[in-house]
Amino acid sequence: MTISLEIQCEELRAELRNACDPAERRQIAVELKMVQAELATIEAKQDGRISAEPPF
Image (cartoon, rainbow, N blue to C red; front, side, top):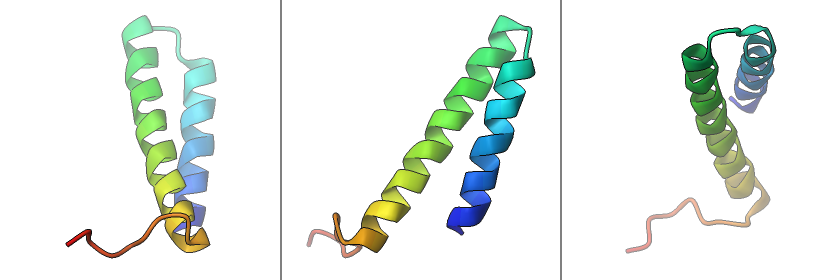
């Protein structure tokens, strides 16, 4: 799963570099931040930095 998210990050970065319209750039930047956050969360769970168990 992380590989597909890493690929998605790279694709979004490429789109961001090539986007000319400011609204499109904002939308791509938001999508990129969401994917990066999801990837960071998954990596933290795998590394044991955060627990995958619910807090209750």
